[in-house]
Length: 332
Image (cartoon, rainbow, N blue to C red; front, side):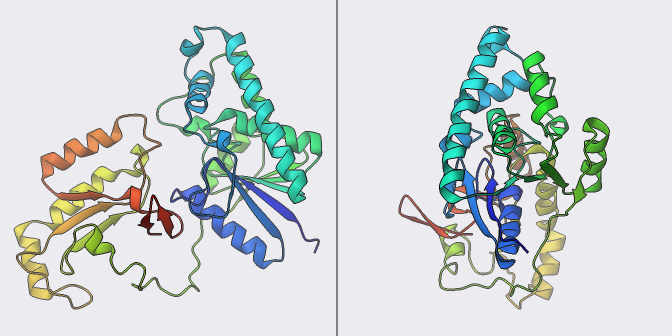
């Protein structure tokens, strides 16, 4: 087997979103096979990723270009030419940075992570597709979501946007192979773009030892204000509409009724801890809300206020890996 030097490209790495977590698992597998892997992102968290700030999908320019590609040209006063110039200027910049890193690291295989499918920062996908074609580097795109699946609605706004989508989102090219996370994505990609893809579901390593309290994480309850006998109901996903977090709020409310509290008091908790009158049932949201542009967080907070459940948001304390941020401990 020929050993490869692989470049993983995602808007952010080392974070708690599903793409970052699955990317880390893929990297581990490839490295165990003897390959070398580098991570590139616009935000690298506590990881060893290589930072290219223009890759991040929540910069003002990235969000502006996203809206101009999929929603309207209002921010360009309807001028496709202005949109096209800014889109291509940013693509040129990213291509130059990608090329420099690829040459420096000797990368000979690309694994784009969602940048050719959800395309939240369109110039990233364009630039990486150019790199593949011009440098003749083979790629395996790991497509988790597609732009046409977004609930906030998409409508390619002009010929430039249509050309971009047809050419690069994702690219149909002899050097590009594709993987999707389920058969629905596989079918849609074939029907919409005529591209065949392998299904590689999200995975979990069941050979790993169970996560346990240790000297590092043992103080988490204390830091977020929970006692040992409180019940900690964890929402570990990002805070976005399609996660259906309303159902978790309903669950916590139902668990906290007098009848169910009485059952918990009578039987104790699964690990033998007692549940008493002072014990709280607390909904803890560890995921970040940066990807919410629909007011979902505000709607959740309204529902939380209506139900009266205890809630703690701890996204600023959690990342894909342990580390520190502004001098404070970060949990994984």
